[in-house]
Image 1 (cartoon, rainbow over the protein chains, first blue to last red):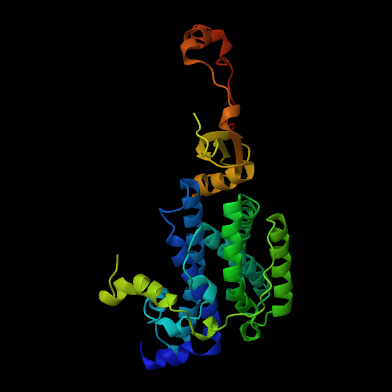
Image 2 (cartoon, rainbow over the protein chains, first blue to last red):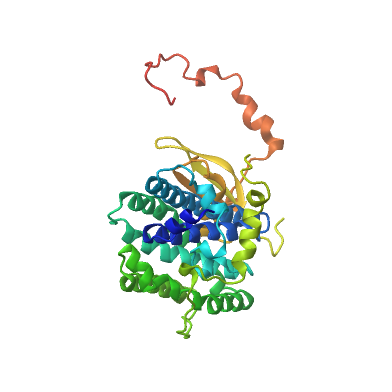
Amino acid sequence: MQNSDLLLLSSVETQKLLVLADTSLIMAQRLSEWCGHAPILEQDIAISNIALDYLGQARNWYQLIAKTLNKREGTNTHTEDTLAYLRDVTDFKNLLLVELPNNNWAYTIARIFFISNYQHHFYTQLLTHTNSNIAAIAEKSIKELNYHVQWSGDWMIRLGDGTNESKQKMVEAVNNWWSYTGEFFEEKLHAMFGTNATILEQQWMAKTKAIFEEATLHIPENKWMQTGGIEGKHTEHLGFILAEMQFLQKTYPNATW
Amino acid sequence: MQSENEWPLWEVFIRSKQGLDHKHVGSLHATDAQMALTNARDVYTRRMEGISIWVVESKYIHASNPDEATSLFEPANDKVYRHPTFYNLPENITHM
């Protein structure tokens, strides 16, 4: 990637959209690892559907970013593919939660529940964003996110209020993911979008508590939260995802189907 | 027969559009009605096949015995007067 591109990518407008685009893309990549491996056929299809929903959302955001960059630069070199395949770890601005390994079904469900519940409320605030493109993508995504919240919420309850083994796995998943949920509400992220982090956190917490109550789960007590994803500081796991995802384009540049 | 650790089987019915009937489209496994509905949505409506879903646990469906087919259905063969073939339908009526 040329230097001029990097300069453009660090501008605020593009940066903030990359948080949304990269979060959706990496989420899709992680979820698609379940394809062919989910506990039963019906859930395999369900989780692949959700992965594709996230991929579709990522594409919408990347197309908007590419359009913005091309316009500013007076070129047409940026595409959704160059953004997805030709950037390196520190260029990615996804939330840390989505890049961590799937571990087991409980971890996967808890992650979908945390993220989709968050994005649902976040995108609802974006409906009134001054940029009509952003509002339109948010509106389209919300319909899908609604379903993801419902689907993952059902599973939170089923596992949390299920057998001893399922409960123990769900409690472990919730405890392990919890410190990655603080990043959802970081002021500097919401300052970029003009969204209200306090209201967002209250809405997210209200839904989380409602589902946890039915699932006989408890909100973890630890208050210390991980940060870094939106600034491009990632865990060691993101590099492995990108290595797999970007392998073909890096080995055979400009290869097409 | 269903083994102990296998989820119950459900039959899925989808209505493709307003005004049409729910049609049987297949079956799936689920632990309860709510999961059967979401599974049906994910498995059978991915390509805009429907606007409404019914699920029924398969064990509640009672079927006629194939061995009795002769006595059940064949007697209708020569009852031509039961068919409404003597009416003329207006041209713009479609779903008849």
